[in-house]
Amino acid sequence: MSSETENADAPRTEDVHLLVVDDEKSICDIVGQYLRMKGYVVTCVGSAEAAIEIIKQNSIDLVLSDIKMPGMSGVELLKWVREYNRSLPVVMTTGFPTLDTAIEALKLGAFDYLTKPFHLEEIAEKIKRALINKQLEEENLLFSKLVSLHEVTKILASTYQLPELNHKVLDFSVKIAKADGGSLMVFDEASHLILTECTAHHPAEFWQNGLFVTVSRWVAENEEPLVMESGETKMFREFPPLPESVRSYIAFPLKTPQRTVGVLNLIRARDKHPFSNVDLEIINVLASQASISIENVRLYQNIRDNYLKTVRGFALAVEAKDRYTHGHSENVMKYTIVLGKRLGLSEAELEDVKYAGLLHDIGKIGVSELILNKPGRLTPAEFDEIKKHPTLGSNIIADVPFLRPLVPMVLHHHEFFDGNGYPSGIKGDQIPFGARILSVADAYEAMTSDRPYRRSLSAQAALEILMNGKGKQFDPRIVETFTEILRSGDGQH
Image 1 (spheres, rainbow, N blue to C red):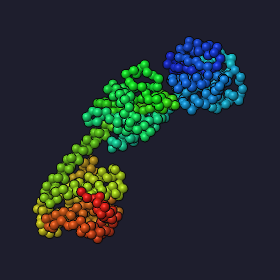
Image 2 (tube, rainbow, N blue to C red):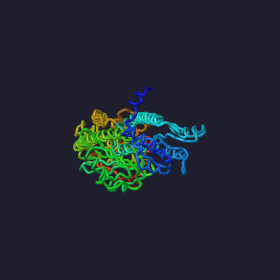
Image 3 (cartoon, rainbow, N blue to C red):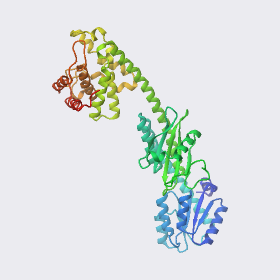
Image 4 (cartoon, rainbow, N blue to C red):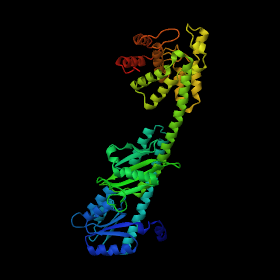
């Protein structure tokens, strides 16, 4: 690599803070003065113990340390640096060079090795190479994190439940930034910034501390991130101080092109190194993606809620045609929820079977009121008309994207477990599980309600009919579960 190329790639010296560690004051003074002439910010200390305190309190870009010093040695300092911040380069110096010492230092992670007496130009060259190498490592780390972030964004984009999305956003942020804690604050419908998610080790009370609330409001209002580190009091006089346990704190606004939806807070503990520029860049990208995902889920839920309100209106319109079935669909929905929970359905499955219970009879909107309200036994032709309602109902909801998962349940809720039902005559496990749940809930609710052709049955009589229908009309497992629920009193509405 040519000297011109290296100069082009090297970080600007005025942005670089070097730490020189040597128990010989004359060496510290000479090296420090020379490096300052090169444009670097330089701090000189005479011991490894003092160096550790400087590293903890400041953002150091490179350490130039003697190996042999009173007290803690340079090799022990190197070990500590590698544990504290692996990306911080260390160049070792010694006046008693041996091959074993050089090999040990390099094995422990030193970037390079210098023997005394050395030329000052040699020090400058080693430092420049170390800083270029650090920059390349940070760029590689950023690239690898961006690759990981690509996978994360795909997961976020496919999450449609807001509580689940909030949890994933915070979890991914903490892991990618290697933070020790974090919280997510979002604006509610009344434009209040509220805490919606936080890590287990730092409960809600910790994040409701005056500092985090004040900073989050400032970040949301100014729409720009804020970084705080322990000891930095002059820059942030308007804010309360950081808690004693916190070394570094970043707050990112979650912004969309239209508005700010919330704030992401991340912290590192007192004994950890502060957030790096790479951390800030990657979290900035993640925060941008998270903002879009949160806003999209809110829009999705609003559209979905509007669809469901419309469809609920359809269900009520169906029941208005039949004075005997008022409230039937609502009751079936309640039974399916209790049954679904007891049968171990996931949240998404439970949501689907819930709305299938509400909409299972929507196809009756296409059936004549004379047939629906006929007081006597139906003729075969009239019963054939009734049997069309599952197909009509599935056709009605099939074109609504949010309701497509409900189609198999609405279509097959009158199938029999032994294959003698309608409209398809399928049996057993061929019948969607949600449809088998609906079949039991629908039958019980119908039997315990008044109909134009009969009075309602008692709960005990209806249960006996369900039990007798096990393996014939109904799935035995679902009947037994429903019976347990009713006998325990959990299914009452």
